[in-house]
Each structure stands twice: as C-alpha cells, then as structure tokens.
Amino acid sequence: MKFLFTATLAALASVVAASPTPTVNIQKRATADDVADIGYATTNGGTSGGSGGTTTTVSDFASFSEAAKGDAKKIIIVDGNLSGEGSVRIGDNTSVLGKKGATITGINLTIKGVKNVIVRNLVLSKVVGGDCITVQEATNVWLDHLDISGDLSVDKDYYDGLIDITHAADWVTVSNVHFHDHWKASLVGHSDSNADEDTGTLHVTYANNKWTNISSRTPSIRFGTGHIYNNYYSTITTSGVNTRMGAIVLVESSTFVDAKRAITSLDSDITGSAEVRDVDLGGSTNDAPEGSFGTVPYEYEAVGAAGAEAATAGAGATLDF
Ligand SMILES: *[C@@H]1O[C@H](CO)[C@@H](O)[C@H](O)[C@H]1NC(C)=O
Ligand SMILES: *[C@@H]1O[C@H](CO)[C@@H](O)[C@H](O)[C@H]1NC(C)=O
Ligand SMILES: *[C@@H]1O[C@H](CO)[C@@H](O)[C@H](O)[C@H]1NC(C)=O
Ligand SMILES: *[C@@H]1O[C@H](CO)[C@@H](O)[C@H](O)[C@H]1NC(C)=O
Image (cartoon, rainbow, N blue to C red; front, top):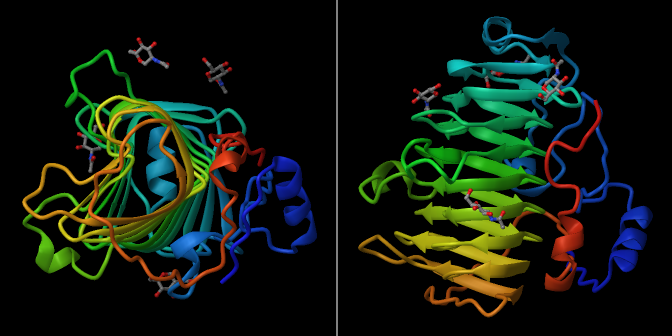
C-alpha cells in the first residue's frame, strides 16, 4: 500500500503526472470504456460496467428504462434533461454516463440484485419519497462524478437518501460526488435489525467527495466497513460520519468546516468505531469510539487534510463524455 501525504496541490499534481494510473482521480479523465480505478469497486474482480459493450443514447425515461434492462454489456449515454416519477432498474454489466449537462429529476436509479454497474457524470435530484440512487444486494458498483441534491426547505422525510447502500451490497466506491442541500445524504445499512444479512458485507469507499449544506449521514454506516478519504465537508448541521452497529470506518485526509458532530456514533443501541488519521475537524468533535481499521486491499493516495478542498474541486458532474 502506498501512502502519499502532500500538503499542496502543486505537489499532488506532480505525483499524479508521474503515475500511469493515478488513483486520486481528480483529472477529468472520461471515456465511455473507463473501468473503476479507485476504492473497493476495484476489488472482487473489479468493476468494468458496460466497457466494451454496445452504446445507446437515451433522452427520456421510457427509453432509459428499456435500455437499462438485461445483463449484456452496455453503455447508456443520458443526453438532456430527464424527469418523471418512478425508478429505472439498472441491469448487470452496465455503464450509465451523462453527456455534458445531463440531468435526471424525480427518477431514482435502482441498482438491485445485480453486479458490475457504473454511473458517472449525472446531475440527480428530488426523488419524492425515495432515494436518488439505491444500491441493494448488488456488488461491484462505481458511482463517480455526480451532482446529487434535494432541498432543505421541505420536510426531512419528503425526499429520502441521496445515495443509500443497503441489503448486503458490497464492493462499492463513491468518488468525486458533490452531495448538497439535503437532509439525509448517504445511508449504508438501513436497519439495526439487519445484522444477519449485512454483517461482513457493505465495504464502501468514499473518496474525493464534497458535502455541502447537509443535515446528516455523510455517511451513516451500520455493520459495514467504510474507508472515507480526501473528503471535504462544509455546513453539516446535525451530524457527519455516523458509525454504528459495529461498523468500522477509517476517516482520513479530510476536512470539516462548520460541522456539528463531525464524526460520531448516534441513534443505535450498539456503537461502531472510527480510526481517524489526519483529519481537520474545524473545531467540531469526534466522539465515536476509537477503532483499529487495519488496511484496505487497494492502493490509494491520501492528499492530507490541507489538500482535501483542492482534491474535491472537480467533484460533481464535471466530466465531458
Ligand atoms: C436542460 O436544462 C438546462 C437548465 O434548465 C438548460 O439550460 C438546457 O438547455 C437543457 N438541455 C436540454 C437538452 O434541453
Ligand atoms: C454480465 O453479468 C452476469 C451476471 O453478473 C454475468 O454472469 C455475465 O457473464 C456478464 N455478461 C457479460 C457479457 O459480461
Ligand atoms: C424510486 O422513486 C420513486 C419516486 O419517483 C419512489 O416512490 C420509490 O420509493 C423510489 N424507490 C427507492 C428504492 O427509493
Ligand atoms: C443551506 O440551505 C438553507 C436552506 O435552503 C439555506 O438557507 C442556506 O443559505 C444554505 N447554506 C449554504 C451554506 O448554502
């Protein structure tokens, strides 16, 4: 494993330039055949989505739903502003990629009971009564370069999560995502009573994400294993990383600004634990029980707390396919 602690963006840039497969992934690398190169999605055989498969461009809900069916290798390019009500179920071996400016409003993407899915470069928002992205009973999922939000002026339960990962989902990476303006951002493990299904699963990496104006769950994690690095948090109004029900997290190389209970263990009968390295709490607190995380089975580059803001400057749907 490689640990690179660099204090400045200039130092980071030189590291990235020198490396043939940069894992910090802050550049706007974007080809439709890209495979996951970061976090737990690179393990368990890796996540290639529809790389090498057929390409279909969709610009409405009905054709998107149709194109997403089945387990053939396929790349779906979302073009334009899609809105509606309901869910698009994404099949196995699929990459869903937003063309520049593509938005999906009111429709949730459901990645359930499948393997090998990539979703990148979309602006997703406002799914009434549901999550923007739901990952359940699914393995090898890479969610990258998304702008994903709700609205804090509505009731806290009007929308549900932004990205919720539950029911023994595993080997998931959430990278370069801008989560903003929402009550309950990201839930890993949905219930205290789901130990039988979830224990030993829910390995999730959160890398290079920006979280702005969020009430809670950045993420909240039960039972699982969470590696949270190079994340930049600003205005977290209730609680941030919540480790519970025996979950173990490593929070490192991240910065909190104006956060309440930045790292904690709340609202479950059993706590989780956190190992915290090189994190700037910005005057907030870490009251989670201290844990010993061990190692992750992939290489990664920690930019250091002072580099987290710069490392997340490209978070959101900033790619150009
Ligand atoms: C999508 O919506 C944005 C913002 O309203 C608008 O600027 C853009 O032209 C729309 N794109 C298409 C393809 O209609
Ligand atoms: C797609 O996914 C299924 C189930 O995960 C797998 O068995 C199959 O080999 C894959 N198909 C291709 C073409 O890769
Ligand atoms: C998907 O979105 C619809 C609203 O468009 C919602 O009713 C449903 O509960 C959502 N499903 C999930 C799993 O969030
Ligand atoms: C956060 O959201 C609230 C409610 O919409 C808004 O009033 C406030 O200005 C936002 N704060 C920031 C820092 O964007």
